[in-house]
Amino acid sequence: MPRARGRRALSAGSSAQLSWTCVDCSTVATFAAPQEGQAPGGWVDGPRGWICLNCRREEVIAAVPITRDAEGRAARRRALTEFELIRDPEATDGQIAKRANTAPRIVRPIRAELREDGRLPGVSGS
Image (tube, rainbow, N blue to C red; front, top):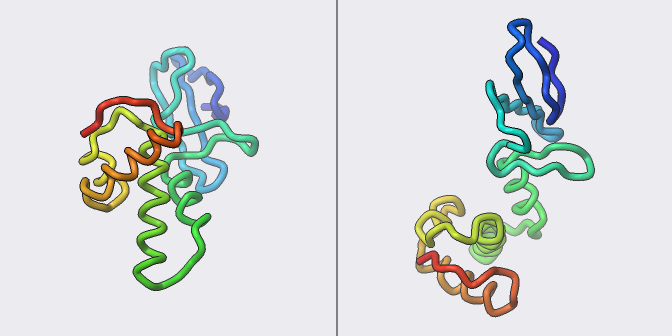
């Protein structure tokens, strides 16, 4: 069966499938009966091609200077928390905390700061 990055590919049984391949890790996501315009959750079509959510998270973490102290870990956690809040502003603080491996009490002030800076819409999420 032919695969096309982000394009409809027909199988032998004439049922349509849509596949995406991450340009960084080669993960493939395929939908058996995709809706037009549907893409895997969290995937983006960047200038290099499709990037999966995991690789996007890794890019965010890699952009933070590497230090082995608590301050470096906190900076990486904060960057990931900001990424998750911007990606899914309607998620609860608990959901964001779980994705960023932190506590909801850490998410609340970051959410408030992003709202104040205009980088996050004013939605509930507590």
